[in-house]
Image (tube, rainbow, N blue to C red; front, side):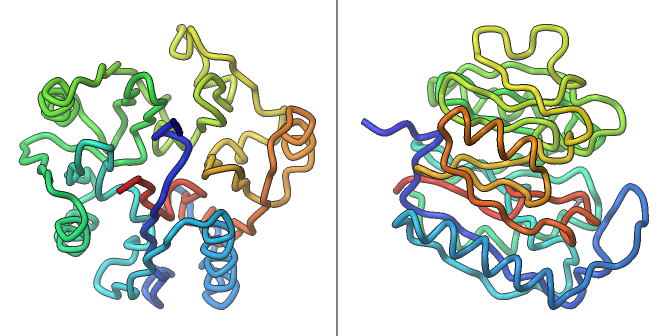
Length: 262
Ligand code: GLY
């Protein structure tokens, strides 16, 4: 049986709109180059499709500059999908844009109703448990509401803390296989990954932490040679993807898709 945390029949992504240049960012390091961002997005979709998965690519959503980062809108599990409640006010409306697509695919569709907030980027499903990092976008009330749904579905949730100044929990870690996590040393403190094998990002390449295991490949931001070499040596089939422009908006590989089995 394939692991639902690493192997997927489907993904959903959304094309970057022209408004992506206005996307949220912690530090302004210049506007993304739209043409290069779209070309990198095409390469990302092609890498997902190369594994045999069906990938739905939604139209750009100009009213929501960060809408290409679809992962934050929902958590998709074998039991159903849960619509998130983003902590960024400008991103709240993205959930309603995504909901009809997931409603057509999942029989059991739940909503985080509030008052808490939670974004998908703060959730790492490892197959054996769901790790959730509280952050500037995800608060205790949002996690508590998610826990009620996951209890019903039989998942164990572990509440953790995303380090100060890090956007999302998964900004700093990725699941490489059901036993192995790629993590920054900063995040991997306090035993949050006890029970897993942890590969630390080489010094100076912490920005490569947000990768995704998707079927038999690992999509990794391009331009991190030590990380690429480490993962290749460990036996992973890596697909480097240009993340230059998404990185300007604090986005990465996981942010660009919802991944699931139906
Ligand atoms: N630009 C991605 C985010 O801040 O949510």
